[in-house]
Image (cartoon, rainbow, N blue to C red; front, top):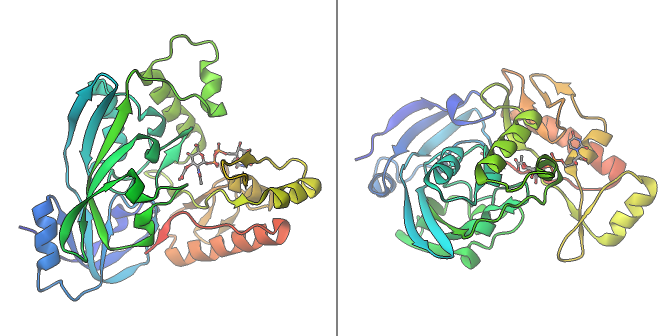
Length: 336
Ligand code: EPU
């Protein structure tokens, strides 16, 4: 049975490390906890939100409602076939610990997604991706509680409508609570070395092992991205914008150094980090927050910062990039 916590601090539940409190909070350790908390007459009419690892959110200081803290644990091998493994993890598992477990157990395929902060349950919401792989590439199904219908539902890949840092869950905030996710890991394992940062380390390596890719991804992320336990941040703060090919061609005339990655639909993905750096924001400070000096896409809390300060900084960056390049940046984290 769930327990209701009152005036609960959330400083440790958001990777920016902002000071924040919720009038009520409930730790969800099982699907039964979830159902009983949702049915609890003391909580029923209050505003409600769900927190996983808190690594992709900008949290306001006060919430006059109930925060459900996803803590359901568990991971298992579901199926081992000649051409694939199916593995499952509960929504409250830490993503990186789960990835490490799959390698320890001999089910490789998620190693490029090592060290991404957050929980398993949050991973499909923004379709996490790094170093040439997206969650959607390894996704089988997920189980979620539909808070409107009051039933558990299973989503296959199509129903999730995955796209770059996007899914159906992002567009229906609050409706679904993801309680477990299944992954399909193809056999035999093939390394994904398409991303230049990773490929460089394996130029002369033969054969390549899953563990070596895992270690390299951990090393590259460690070099480029700040550890949220040391400097508060939410990973990339802006999505890489995708523009029409003719707009890219025009921009290239005035900014010859600008890169671009052609997409399947013919449009071009730009590097948001490059746009932010060229607009002069890299390393900039504003009050207690700023732009990380080693990667322009990461906004950081230097200590004592707030959602309001981050919002102001993000607004200035968006205006600066719009003025210089005419490109609209879109935030990646969710504002709560
Ligand atoms: N760049 C700059 N200035 C910088 C940093 C990078 O100009 O300060 C340029 C460089 O030219 C570099 C390019 O930006 O080649 C791309 O940088 P990077 O390889 O670091 O990747 P990214 O596009 O900035 C994306 C994801 C990351 C993911 C990496 C690796 C988004 C919004 N971000 O970053 O995901 O780890 O690729 O695959 O898609 C996240 O979503 O939170 C995240 C960290």
